[in-house]
Image (tube, rainbow, N blue to C red):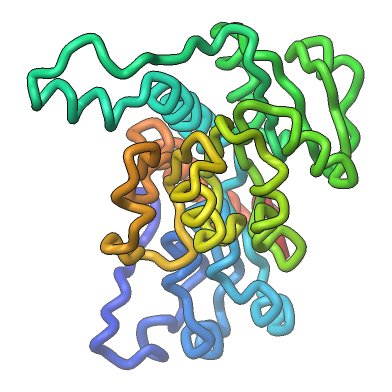
Length: 295
């Protein structure tokens, strides 16, 4: 209500719609196109309503000298951590099998698994990884983490980490833990970071959790490992192709739990991200630098 809002109509010419616009809010970073940027001469900020930028051609925006900001990890960290914890609990209690048994009138099976004392490896110790560590502590999980940044001694103590490593330690963590949870951005370096080789290193009863980006995992290799009984289960909220092909065997295995990329979609996250965007619109209107710039 403090600003003049214009909603893009994709059926109308672009240039008149971008005339005299100060800020563009791009939902998820996937809505903006090169053609839009090319006619956005008056724009002072391209605000992505979301965290990940793997669907956004950041280099093109940089080449055009367009400032870009996003809504970074802390705005969705709680939602992602809660979903990861839910996946862990559901896999440990074999929820799909339990539901099938209940519908068939079969009680007292399957045999579940307690989390106390199991080892959790958190790959990417940013905002959502930290929030998962907090929640996992309450369930008695032993926690290890890997990150490209240096995790301080204070953080190690605060979050009760048994081990903190760098990407060079990834194979060790993959082989040691009972649960592996991914909290990474998708980059050329992290694409298929969990591939057939690393899946083979995991314990046969271990669980893989992915609430980050689908292409972090080689899904074909994951499917094969699960079918062959070389992995205990998987909880997946993101997929290499979205929407995914739900006819694939991966989506029909009794030890796989899937969600439609909604781990970070909650009322709290929506409010947080909307406030982030609104704050930056206010800052541009006041002649201030935007927060959370990535370009």
